Amino acid sequence: MKPEILMMGPMMPHVEAALDDAYTVHRLHEAADRDVLLAEAGPRIRGIATDGHLGASAEVMDRLPALEVIACYGVGTDAIDLGHARTKGVTVANTPGVLNDDVANLAVALVLATSRHLVANDAYVRQGRWTAEGAPPLSRGLRGRKVGILGLGRIGKDIAEKLTVFGCPIAYHGRREQEGVGYEYFADLTEMAAAVDFLVAICPGGPSTDRIVNADVLAALGPEGTFINVARGSVHDETALIAALLNGTLGMAGLDVFADEPRVPEALMKMDKVILQPHQGSGTVETRRAMGDLVVENLRRHFAGEPVATPVT
Image: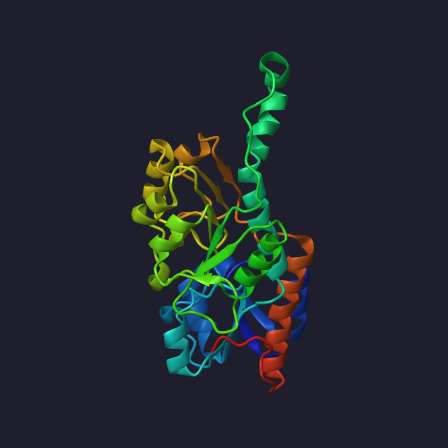
């Protein structure tokens, strides 16, 4: 008999096909009555397939007494109650590594796009202003401009390595200084913001980083500074960010994430000194396929009695 699993939301077609082949899949997002589904199938469900946004709450876990494993499509696990999973002895796996390169590439692209005014200059050409008004204002180069990375994990290190090629000195802030890392460490985020030209957020979400990039940090970054966020929308104070951009306390921003996705504040959409992306850090065909494959592999390993490939707990 196939193990029974709960799918919290839709997944890539090849992932759903693989899961349907190996398991009896209960799709919570398609249920006419979720409570009825959980009441009827909950006692038999041994695994959850989810993503970093839908997660798995303590309430859902408590309704699945046979739950053994949660496989998350994505690196972020802030929507999964990890403490509760540990208490219940539930294995949690995510999909790190396979998305590092593309997330780092998008961060670098946002640094380049904000520095060289790529989006504004595209509009300048399309609107006929180049012909009517002549050349636009000069943009800024990258060499010698310092980048501060908030969260020097696997992706943060990739961002640092890529930006070093452009001649950017690198600094970082995290919970502690890392051994064997040659970049300048700042124990205080505000102090780092005051010392850099770009602040790139790539730290985990969750209570410990909630609105860690606040008004003081943005003010320290300054009117010539640029804030880039490819982490979570909760990492920056969105109200403070909008105010800083409007009053000129902050120079520019490149945002791939927002506080209430997919809803983006109208104020941000009206600003030409902000470049917006629809949470596309890992959004390439290659990376998303690899992430889906890893979800399938983690579940396969668990039910085969093997350790999952990428455990969180």
